[in-house]
Length: 158
Image (cartoon, rainbow, N blue to C red):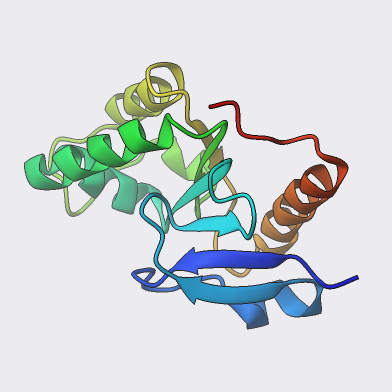
């Protein structure tokens, strides 16, 4: 049986690539309309948006132009049965968060936005740890998705 294929968007600046995923997966760069990652054959079911840090998501939320684009992305994600926002940072780093790029952003205001993303847009926000320490978690996530796909446990409801 061939390895599942992870698709990632060509606009990803630092993608999780074949080296990151190892021999368990095939990895292919492509054009995704929504999100950064999915599995081949599940592109109407699973959408995964990746942010490199709390600072990156803060800049997406607190810059007017970026916020408009980010909200559009969240709205598009709502059409998918499985919607994940993976943040390559530790949850503990959110406590006392202060971004050098976005003045006035507090840990509490960012946490409020995370709750909004989860409750209003139905997107599960998962801090997966810093790059280099998150390999097991991210690989496990894709293994589970591939297993669910094989077992027919995830399907398009539309």
